[in-house]
Length: 147
Image 1 (tube, one colour):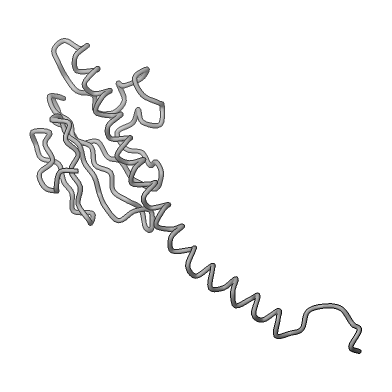
Image 2 (cartoon, one colour):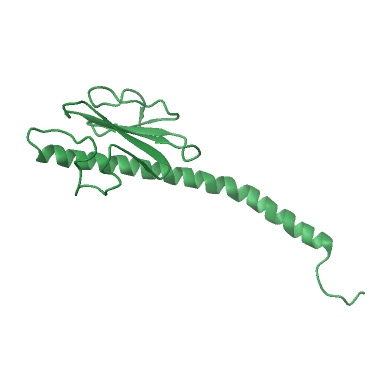
């Protein structure tokens, strides 16, 4: 029996324990990285929408803002809507009926992020650590901290 080759049960258990410890350390970091990537994508999408809105506003007479469906050719078809979901965030466009202002919010779906974002006609992105971010009637984010 002494000449048999292989691993003992104790050696296998040590390897399994080491793998479990590495996984316990790596998985939370992976999830945090994913949330950070989703948040960065949401911010980038809001900036893209604002640029398209500025271009649309400058090219229309009288100057108006799109409520999401007139940005064809300026943004991807996914972003050319009043409401859409991208990278775990729900985006909603708010505007007045005469289209003189706009505001867009980005709120995370469950587990996709921890902060909500919004952008208005002034181009400043505001952030809130929960889903309470809101748009005002004049196209300005009514609460939140500057990003």
